[in-house]
Image (cartoon, rainbow, N blue to C red; front, side, top):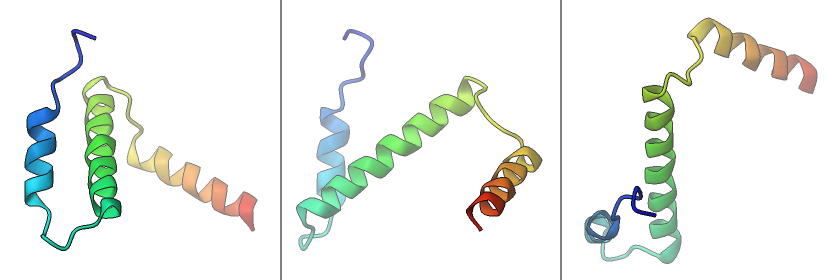
Length: 67
């Protein structure tokens, strides 16, 4: 667990950035979005990406199969 970042400061900043009217759902959503972005950035930095043309081909294939 030594390689895991300490998220306490980031979590505090996230909570403080929410409006006073925020709900638990708002907090959970913001945490989810933050985590998804960090995972995506790590994938990109590790070279786990797909080019635009290939991504579009995959999407079109799924649309065709769904219809």
